[in-house]
Image (cartoon, rainbow, N blue to C red; front, side, top):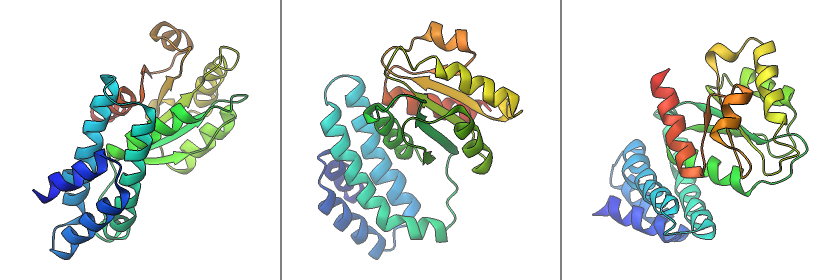
Length: 211
């Protein structure tokens, strides 16, 4: 029942309750990995599915994600001590010239919910910066977000910069945002497109598992 309680408190966005319940589990000798996967990630998974089905909306997802972060704060030192390997490393950012970040932030939270280590470069990120961060953090995936038709062309430049740096064989490039389509993804040579944050996190898992 206790893991369900963590999951339920997270879905309702009750950060204080999540913190208390996580601490209680740790005090009872449950491993940080178990609490992370059985409680926090399980709860975020449900939020992701509901978001995809339009049963909850952006505000609820953000509140749930905040509650998840509160739980992870307690677990982080224990996870590092137990050396729980992340599923993979993702570098994420909104492309050059674009300052929109709600979609990017949602994707980041969903990816963290799936167990990825996410390096957030923020907004207005130049292609070279995506590539440099991917090299520095040995990333498996680069995620580019754009909300404007005028900035989406930057995604092509990110793919070109990754090609030029010779990192493409080991790094997948995912793109998303309001104006992006599957066709556009193919036309710029990116590896994957997702219509929403929950699908993006699922697609990232697929890309890692297929690698």
